[in-house]
Length: 440
Ligand SMILES: Cc1ncc(COP(=O)(O)O)c(C=O)c1O
Image 1 (tube, protein in one colour):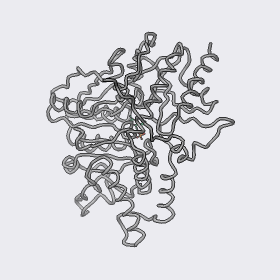
Image 2 (image 1 turned 180 degrees about the horizontal axis):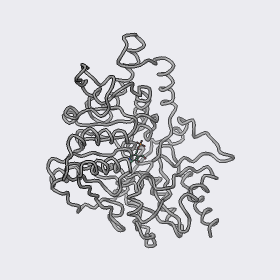
Image 3 (image 1 turned 120 degrees about the vertical axis):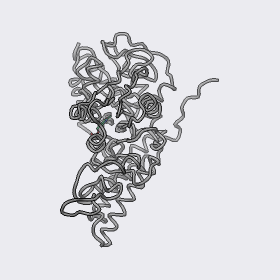
Image 4 (image 1 turned 30 degrees about the horizontal axis):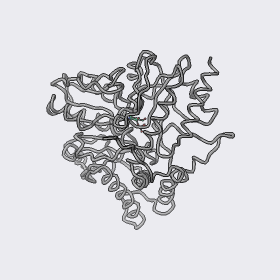
């Protein structure tokens, strides 16, 4: 049976673009082409309005005073938590608000890790982890004299940019942390498959998923995912900076000691001892970032109105097109799995071969395209593209272990989201050709 082309008929990118004030900006004569969404996504008017409304009309501290205003602020904050919980299929008490993914992962590393990891245990992470899901575990391993193992990233061929599925978890594995999506390769890891494998090969393993690059693209059902913890950042999914989430299984959160101590997280304080508040307050010491939680809820509602599946379909179409067009430029190396091609990772990518689009595979990535141009540093590439108002990221992307694996110091990275267009990809490709001319 012939494969059906993914249809995105009701996805109106021009209408979506009109929701984002910043996309009207010009730099000189150029319209902004914002292709740096894996670093942070832009904000629709609905999110800006929700923040302004909270500050203009409902602002007060939360969970403290009995004034009508204070109760309005508390209701807005707690209803934001319900929105997040519903969005990921979780119970409300399982949603802990943090500042970002980094804080969420550190919370687990300090609170759960300190109480549960001991000398001789193994912690397993991956070569594709962002520093936020590497350094906390590396430091915990050093502190506890635990072993630290890395699941390798596969090289060229069919498995290009995937985690090594033949990796065997050591029997003494206590914790397995991995990214839902690689912020460099765009690889989507199968949360259920990897969690089941870890728990089968090393029973009792606790699984932490770094969802920073996954949550903006996928509908989640976290209790059914197989993971024990999932961390994500609001700012990468059109929400405000400063809005982060940690989801954890209720029974684990209940057992886990607090991370930060202070106001709001206590039940009773006596001179010699303290008891903790119920979930999730136990993990939210001090005045929370209530306004940004409200903004995150607005972002979730906005994305859900459009539909995450449609957004994902849109961005991988752009990524496939970008890969196809960039691969035609001699000297361009593309890293990671591709919907329409396979490319060498590491070495210098000389053997990249364009193939027919493979939609099934394309579903296995997000709209992130990391690449290099022979003889040009990624920073120079980024700076010259910026002259045309094309914003990409260049550097190590907070993934130096992966850079080492790919045998490069840095890459350029274009990352697409709901408001990006094929015309912007064309501008990117023209820009890269211009850079090549300048350097040849
Ligand atoms: C995969 C991944 N993990 C973690 C992070 C850290 O997110 P934050 O800076 O919001 O804490 C990022 C941010 O780029 C990321 O892409």
